Length: 237
Image (cartoon, rainbow, N blue to C red; front, side):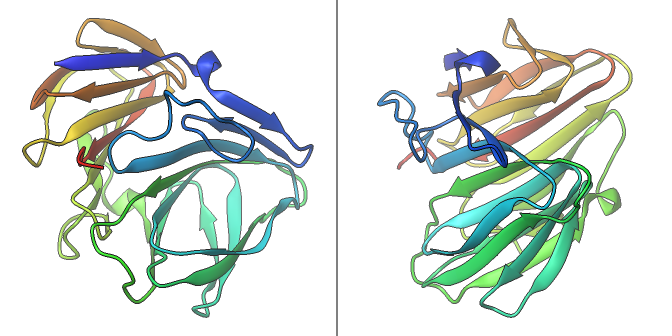
């Protein structure tokens, strides 16, 4: 097993006034040659957007874009005709494919919005763009891991054009368990949202991450009041 711990304070940062960003991988004005991507995982931005602030209309192509609000709500509009709010407790996916335009704004003029925006390289290029949004409450399992994303449109959660699986865990009791990769050769990128987790003997706290490759299974111990995200990622990128 190869494993690397990334402490929260080691991430790249940017403060644009309306946006306070934390970058797990090189992005915008943050460049670290040792943190370009983890397999197909290209972007993991932990953004705090001020009330009414946001990203004006801009393009994307050939990228799987996943948005998970952690607090507040996101106002979304795109060239496919979708206009929606994505709230805490929901997940949104866009397969940019052969090209889309969209805008993203804080849907509140009073409260800040905190979200993860995650980009993965797709396994197929130039597909027709697609959009999907679901509530996670239909999937949540207290004190258990539950799947929120996969490559299979008939499986639990949202789906993308990539052999990746995302699971979340929310624990209000101490928990010990394991996670097995869904596809041979995949790696694991685990991000602690809140609380404290022990992974393969390493202690991780809020917004710490761990990148693991060459391992088909990891042991996890979560303390009470903990939430984390597991991303099961193809590594041949």
